[in-house]
Image 1 (cartoon, rainbow, N blue to C red):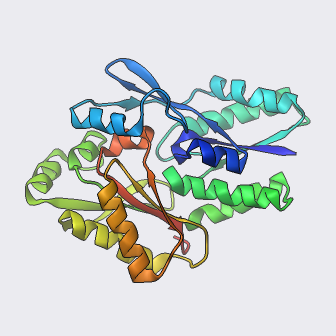
Image 2 (tube, one colour):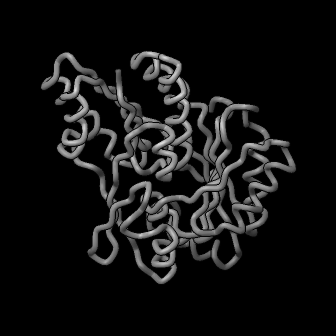
Length: 287
């Protein structure tokens, strides 16, 4: 018997957590010196209010989860006689993965009859969530902890992320682009095209002029690389529902894919991309 844990960057909603029978670990961010918790219910601050605060000039910061906190979360499961699989936010975007590995090592020394296995998802938002969903499906089929862990380590390279953002200044603040590029791009209406690479890092790969053109670009890339009938295709957005709806409509019309769901990007990821992010997250051909 084993439990599946993941972190709040999956952007699952409370009903998803219940349906999947998983544990989602909260993550924290800070705005104006006040700490908020990102959870499936987002009790502290709704995603809409979070993005509104950013539009008003607030600059949230995020931090990694310390190893001791993971140990506190893992210990009750191990004490109950169960093992644990933890599917973590991409290590290229957070130091939390390394801390989770330290905690897993410590916990297995304290509980030598138990296992704690940590998967670096190399993914984010509902891309990470897709990996969790697939692992849950395998657990329901009776697959062992080791089987699911090994499967996830292989399958994570099939999770695809194609992303565009509306405001380049947030990427500039995170060091993704230069200040000059942000200014010029803003004046010319240049929108970057970003993908998650094989190391789980966000990498700019192209740029186009205009919001609609950037979303069309994402759809074209999706059409070239998706695997039919492999789970839900997620269109994730940062408080720009109309753009997400346009994206979903284009996916359905151009590819015939029907299983498309629109979700919101939570504050941990949104703190670095800003409002206006649109992403297509899906299971596709290996990178």
